[in-house]
Length: 39
Image (cartoon, rainbow, N blue to C red; front, top):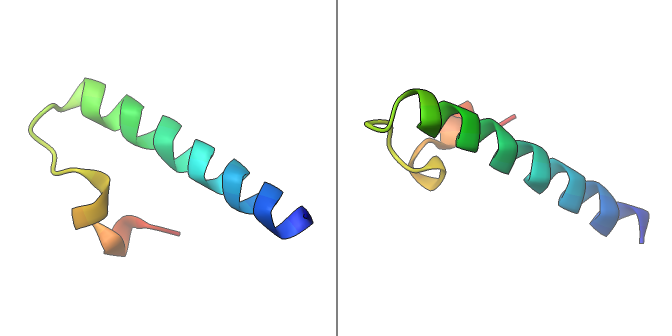
């Protein structure tokens, strides 16, 4: 239970991070093509 909640929180954080980055620079690749950027 805790593990899945942590995964959801991490995914939500990554989504928010990429939404901000894509708004700043629409030319960036989608998140799944930038695996080195992931924590």
